[in-house]
Length: 98
Image (tube, rainbow, N blue to C red; front, side, top):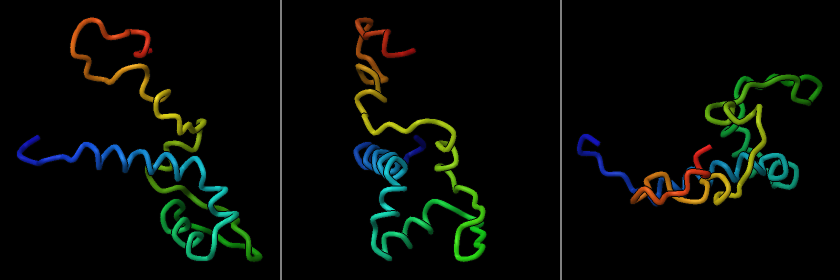
């Protein structure tokens, strides 16, 4: 780690928040107030092109662009498998690694 301390709980919460925003961005935008919409438009897309007051094209900022082609799940137990990625012994359930 080169002397840098990481707050693992903070990092996990940031990742969790990212997936939750990604999974619900459409609903947040459709139902959100002006400030919510503004925040989403500064967070997710780039290179917005408007035509007749509608979005004609856009690109997604990283890391949102990485999720654009696949389904998004906010079920973190399912995403993480049955156990953590640093098993304490050989009794780790190998089924969670495929």
